[in-house]
Amino acid sequence: MQCAESAAASESPAVIRCVALDAVGTLIEADPAVADAYARIGRRHGSRLDRVQVDRALCEAFAACFESDRVGTPDEFVSSEESERARWRWIVGEVFSELGPIDVVDRCFEELFEHFGKASSWRCYDDVAAEVSRIEELGLEMLIASNFDSRLHAVCAGWPVLRNAHAVVVSSEVGWRKPGPGFFEALVSACGCRAEEVLMVGDDPVNDVQGALACGLQAVRVDRAAEAVPGTDKLAGLSRPAVIGSLSELEAWYQ
Image 1 (cartoon, rainbow, N blue to C red):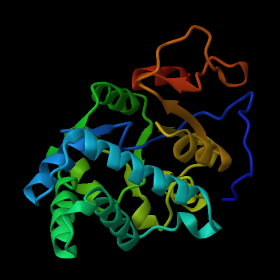
Image 2: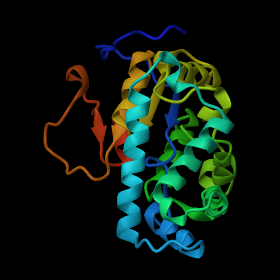
Image 3: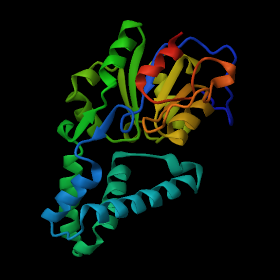
Image 4: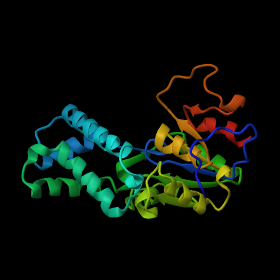
């Protein structure tokens, strides 16, 4: 599959056969929140940062990773288990630089890495179960497509609503992260249909939407925080919204 350099919505979009859902921010969210978990576990290893300070440090570390991802060579989207683990180790080190000795930071990282690999550390959004049932009712394939690592399999296995996914496509396992073309090539291959018959659903406008559209998939962004505005974005004059506030609004894409 060759990805186009730019994509525009077709006036007669293909019938959707597969729905690929991003994981974090689309299907699941950390519970307790990421900053709360970091602050609590950090304290066990000697950190004196409060929740607000941890949240600020996390935002700065994530912003640095985001900026690094947006500049560089075409190989910037290469992924592996080792590189993803190294990325999270760097983030933990940035957040808890006060801890000093490397072995202390390493122990803190190991506990955090294990924590977020457990299904009990996450919760499904309230709209997930009903939408997954609707996808199955329509006879469509549901896949999970995420910039994560192999821990995601255990997380999904811990939530019955996610266990029946046709496939779980994980960046560290396919060798490429979204929005890299390699990721979407692997996703389309896992779907077993044409790229234009795949709907990518996610909360990130770049990783999930732009990356998918550039590779010929259909795409829609989920923004649960956005207030509904009458007449907001419709794709190429169609009744399909470019941004939805809940997975239940995907119904317009199935028609």
